[in-house]
Image (cartoon, rainbow, N blue to C red; front, side, top):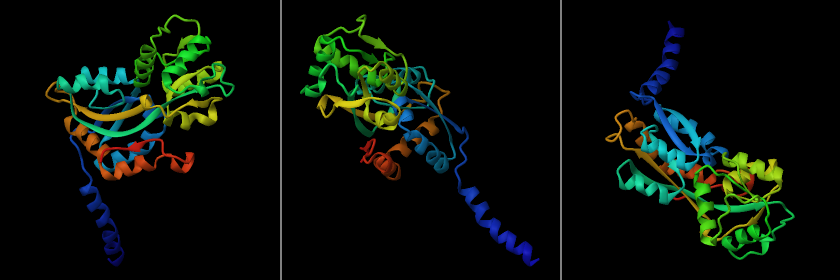
Length: 273
């Protein structure tokens, strides 16, 4: 009887913990997000934390920001984590996206071969740098996938009054950031990348940071859940739970520290507070 009593005492806290764990009615939460959050490794850290704290199963679909926003417009995702404010705003304005919240930022950088054939190390602005790439007919690898990074790149070409599409030196990968970095490395070309993905992939590619720090290269991430009043199949509670999780103090602390141990600097800066 003493043995059974001891076992019962050991099981009691476990049963109590189980009872206190949230048990959502619809467990799967579909997150549509940019590939940079996946390729950087950030979601590998946040996913188990979210699932442990909420009881949900997070299903991550990492695509370009444009594709992620389209999933939101069609009600094919419960929550979005993206980085293209101009493209996000229409979804907020028409009520497709709600609980629109600032999460974090890092920056874009231009990377390329250490030899820097276009000489952009000496450029004072991003627009000047891409003009130099164009004038030298140096290989530039674009994501070409309507992602947040691709949108930023196109805005830079537009500002420079250059139409690169169709030029022999301008090549579109049609893939995520990690794969695009690999292609640029193989071709010894230039590309625009978010800093987080570059740092995470740096040991695998032969590319150096050649231009950084321009204010035009700020890279801001927002989270939002898809409005259940627009799409009845959306997991409203699950989407809101992920938004709340991303802006929570504990999560923001994880984001702020992510990458410091391995890279000597954070890959993202927490902004929710």
